[in-house]
Length: 549
Image 1 (cartoon, rainbow, N blue to C red):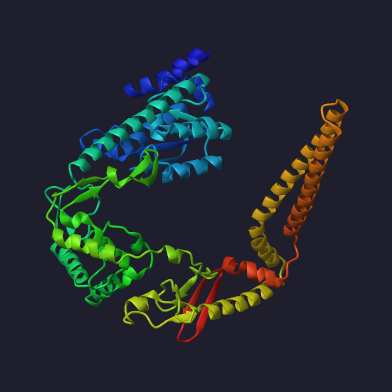
Image 2 (tube, rainbow, N blue to C red):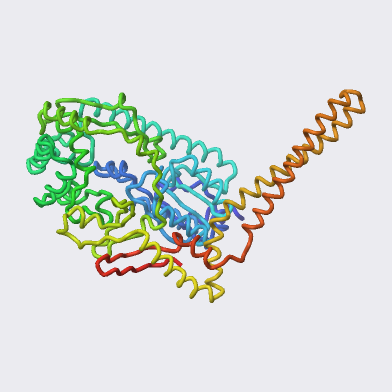
């Protein structure tokens, strides 16, 4: 009867030719059980597959994947809950947005089945195969199925095939990574420029994007920087002159020329927005051999094809190729600058021995006029100050004069914090929050004391056993009276020491559990933790504090 129903069902639902080979393995009984189950469709398209589409291969397109999975879900009797698509993401990428959204929905119980065209579309990482297909999904009661390679977590005998697919996919990525590394290494050795954006002073040749040509507008600035330095100007003075002449810093210049350019200095409000040059930028330009026509690459490398973290490469392994593009600076001028910079270096070791006290407000003080984080410096009178770097670097042309003594600012912050806490501790809920903030700092100490007390107690147990063994050995004649007495005295002294340590660590551990702290202690412990930001108007002596609690 079951067989007849299966035959009748297949006669009523004619399938396209390619579906007879791909989904014919799932029988009618399974379709009946799967009725009304919710299914998530996952599609992924990597950059490599997109390139294939451009030359006519559309088998990996998102549209075709979706159509294939929708028809497959219909054939199996699944209801489609949602379709999750990641475009331009590698199968090794663990930060795919749609993938993470699907996993989050899976944990909420939104669906019972995950469908993919192939297991490689889901992931090419063997670790993720084990984590999700053989770990998380079985716990959540979710079935994974792939159309092309017939992966199905409901079939026990299918596990080895899934693991083999995972290994093959990972080997493919590893081989592809090695091939790409080999190609890039060869290109670097040939002197081809592989950077996404050219260095300041150059632009990419329109005929050959791996070759640099001089950008005359920026190159003139580079020549001027070298000339000023050879004339004896300091780096700070050069930075100020460039600002005075209205010349944009390299990051702003590149952003204007290349809209897709991104830099940390452009992602948040910094001095770059005001057209201010930094000393480090000038120093990098003066040290960069690219202005001699030399291409230096391969300074860093990725740890693994699975990890984006990079590590430094020894200088002897760098790819350095000369005469690859027109130089901006003459060789003798470049070498003269290097000698001058070397001569101006001084030994910093004596200064490292001095210990300057850190500030509890470091990183939290901002200028109320321009929004720039204020810098901390030590005056000639030995007093520490916070000042606005924008006003200082621009020689007063941008922002306003804004400086304040650290001790005055810290005293004001402490007084306002006491008032804030005094008003907050009246309510039990706020008191608990404050106490939690204070005791969070003592968690580490409490754990350390508990661990040390446990070690001391274990030592006491060992010493007690050793003392007992002395009596046994003495009764058997293995030790003389004198030897036994000496060993007993030594062990007794050590036992008393361990008892004392146990008492000390226990007392300290109990002190960290105390729930009654004076308001002064709370204010002192929470000063840095509770203050989110302080804005200062030095001229008006106006201080605004923004609290985290």
